[in-house]
Image 1 (cartoon, rainbow, N blue to C red):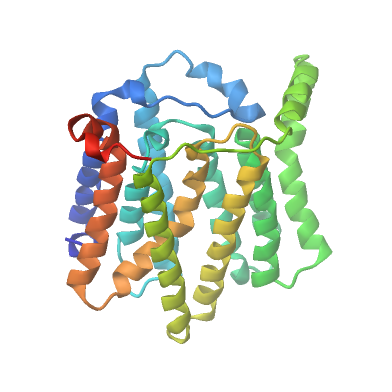
Image 2 (image 1 turned 90 degrees about the horizontal axis):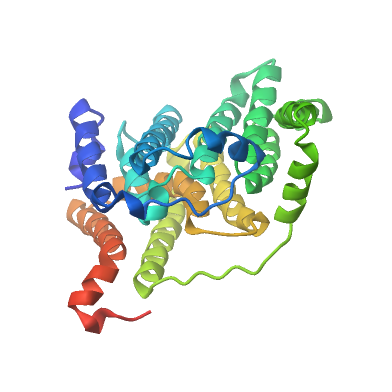
Amino acid sequence: MLAIFKNNKPTTFLAILILFILLKINVFIAPELAINKQSGGILYNLLSDLFSNTHPYFGIFASSILIFIQGNIVNQLCNKYKLIDSLTLLPLTIFVILSSISTEYAVFSPALVANTFIILSIRKGLSLHKEQKPILKLYDMGFLIGLSSLIYSPYILFFILSIILLSTFRILNVKELLICFLGLLTPYLFITSYLFLTDKLPGATVEVLNSLVYQTHHFDLSLGTYILIDYILVLYIISDLLFLNNKLKHSIHARHTFMIFNYFLIIGILSALLEKDLFLSHFSITFIPLSIYLAYIFNNIKKSKFADILFFLLILQILYCQYQSKLEQFLPFMNYK
């Protein structure tokens, strides 16, 4: 089964699309399940009025397009920097599968929109080693992070990742760091000017200050969801160890890139501390590094049948998490948390 998604052919993309539809069928049938609970940043709130009265299918359709765009960029990075031995659509496949864990990932949420700009920023950063005059890319990298944080404020923490990228692929110096920081500030200067001219600056300032109030977060997750999270983490750890064992087979850039995505995962999780009202949709940012690591382990397991079993278990657990409430109605003994 896994061999279908290891190729890099148009028919493989069609198979991924069919898999995506099957995994999202519950949302397509009942679009009212796709409700955005997440509060956005200043820019997202300003633009939200444009699609506030649209049909729920608009949000599902828009989020689906973003998921495929993001997954495709991640897949391109894997192939470009040879993170996986062969050209494959496996990272895109895993990204699509992970995005089906919860109905919250079928929503046109601030985090999902902001993820696009974070991925584009990382793509800029990973190509810094080729640039003799990287001023434009440094500025763009900071600008994209600033833009993403205006859409979803906790992502301001990803500026730390830009510093890590600079220190990894460049000789870190104050000038280049300052250029990146100026890029980060530029979207804020534009949005502040707009708010000032429209007399919305005081209200926006109060909104930002209120969002800085930290609250203890608690998730009421089912046992099935906890098992799925543990399963994904185990695969991630094994994949990391497998890469370390095979690191001499990869280029220096590939080794650095894998390290960068480790930092990416940590920062993505830590950014949850900056969110006042935290929902599962926040953790969609972790799908970016996880899709790479899971694709790596599935591609490098020598026994294809064993890889198929692990892949099937991942899909099976996601389906169980989606339909657990309905299963409990027919099978009361499964009603546990």
